[in-house]
Length: 89
Image 1 (spheres, rainbow, N blue to C red):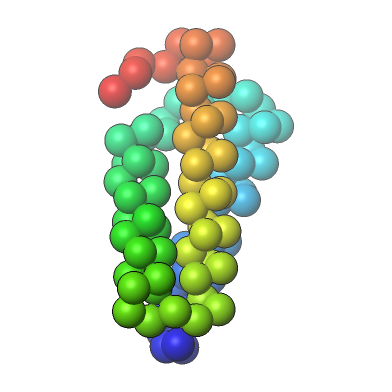
Image 2: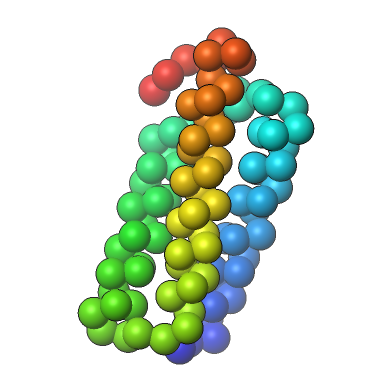
């Protein structure tokens, strides 16, 4: 486990609950990018695969938590996109 890897995951992980709570509270998703969120999800998935194959430790739970939060934010995007009138990318 690397301190820097853990710090990166914590820093990135702090932003997703804020984004999720704003979407739930306002039901506005304009300005969010489903393409960006999909790329971030892929990045976390690759991090999980690396942890499983080469460096398994408890930090994998941080990758999984972040992946789940970004996935929820992406689901909320598609749920509220029609109501918000946003343009699908």
